[in-house]
Image (cartoon, rainbow, N blue to C red; front, side, top):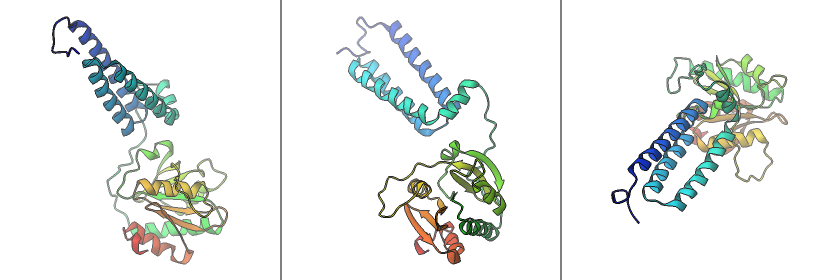
Length: 262
C-alpha cells in the first residue's frame, strides 16, 4: 500500500481537490445543522465521520470509507427525521436568525423560593382535585435546553392561573410537559422520550415520559394523573406517589437536593 508521503505517481492535484470538496461539504453540513437544530449529537456525528473519511482517503481504505459513508448517511437521516419541524423552517429561510428569546440557562434569578413553591402547590392541588392530567419538569443542574426545542416557548413567570390554563384540556398546549427554570415557565407542550423500563403497575404516557426525563437528568418532575388525580414525583429514574397533604414538603426536599430523605 502506498501512503501519501510516497510521492511516486501520487496526484497531488487530485488529492487537494478531493480534500477541498470534503471540507466544503462538511462545512455546509455543519452550517445546516447549526441553523436547524443546534444539537450536540449532530456535531459529534459530523466530526467523527469527517475524521474517518479523511483517514480512509489518505490510506486508500475503500471498503472502510464505504462503511463510514453508510453509517454517516443513516445517522444523518435519523437526525433529520428527529428535527422535521426545524428542517422545514430552515428550508423556508436558511439564513433567518432565530428570534426566540434565550432562556438564560445557568443564570439564577432573584425570587422568593417559598412563594414559588406555594404557587406550584396551589396549581398541583387544583389539577389533582379536578383530575386534570399534567406534567411539570423543574430544571436543576442538568440543562434541558436541547430537549425543550420540540416545545412551545413561553418565557413567563410561574403562576397557578397560567399553569391551570396551559393544562386545561381545551388548550393546544395541554399535551406534553411544562419545563420550569427558576421562577420562569420556559416552554410548554414539550415531549420527552419515555422510559423503556418494565414496571409492574400500569403507567400512562405522562408517567413514562416523566421517568424518561428523570433517567437522563437531575430534574424533578411532577405528574398528575387524569384518571385518578394522583400526584407523583419522578426523580432519578424512579416514580413516587405522594399524598396531597405532604406534597409541599416532599417537593421542597427534592428541589433542595434532599430527595433521598423525602
